[in-house]
Length: 170
Length: 340
Image 1 (cartoon, rainbow over the protein chains, first blue to last red):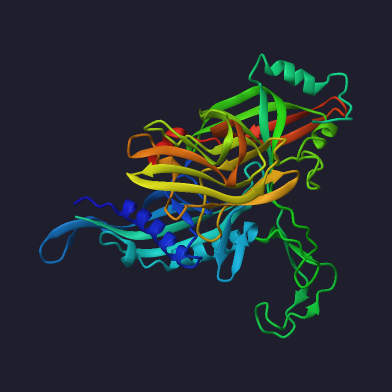
Image 2 (cartoon, chains in turn brown, purple):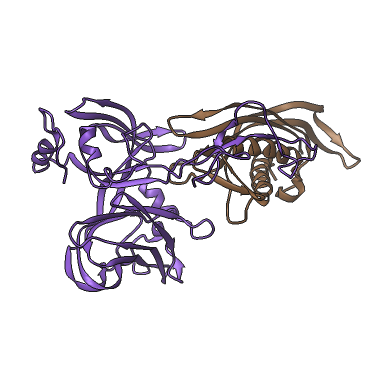
């Protein structure tokens, strides 16, 4: 069967972030994770948007059509890479209860940046993946473009997240 | 009625009255200003070495309170103190009855963006002079309104979806029953003018969602005037009934009365899901007093709103004000209907 790693990783990444971060806030409230820039009718805050930026193979093992095992199966193994941009958007009025405190605006943004960074590097892929997946390496680069859109009254930040996984095809 | 205010050579109020007979560009707006919340500040250092805001935070920081650049969740009055800055309670202002002449540069325009199609707009509102506005009902009586500022919002009736008949009679509650299969998803807000010697108890919208009755009840307690109409304007969507419950301000004589959203001990109405078949319909509107009294209702609108935000202001003293406004948060009604 043809491999579907990119969709599997993308979905697992979104589910992982959402599952982890929503356990840390008041049960009556939500942080919303989107796989696209949501339309005005759909967007709810705080919003986390996962955007696939680039993908391609990084390194190939043993060339193509290598023989695996004594059965004579030939296949190609390679390290494949994907890069995502993770965006956070928070409306000025958004308020989230975390523990006994209420977080808004920059305070909420700071909390989300650190915790999303923690979650994406700690994701247990076994919990969220839908088919065999071997993640070799992952890293979240620094958050940048941290700022305030005065026209929309939104606080926001963006970070790049890269994953390397084993792409083995026979 | 505004008295003893210079109307200038243009006399904007008279001009708008005359124009309103010829064009719908004279709009009856609701002025809205968001609440101003307490500032988060720090005034003490953690001198005992234990983390958090425990008993160790007793020693003053040198210098003034440090403002962290974000707001707290409360807007109640507080004095300067431990990690507190002076704050006077400043709830949201929501004042109907502001008439303006709208000159649409673009009153409604679709814009294709990364998120898809978004409705935006830009226009100029011409208003009477600030002195005149400050003398209007509510505007003159609340001490919170001084002048129009950027980020203030002007809510307009974009499209009236349901317009029940006016009513005069003695009753404890007036029930408007809507026609079968009445859709609700386009409706953002409900507005009406009421005059009565009674006390407004609640406003109830009932519907049918997937064949099950659903409710939205705005509950309050507001003694009304039997001589002058009071305008009530409340939202009907994106409401939360779990803690914290959505509340909305209603102003009468410059005083804020808070109404709370609820579900009338039934299922909470999600009006976007009432797409207009026999099992998903808006059924009725009830306006109830605490007891039977003579009640006059007029200008009852269940409407789709347009939110204009003030971007720039030109004030021509006694003559008029020119407000540049932007509409940023337009929407796609088709998505509302599809996704509920």
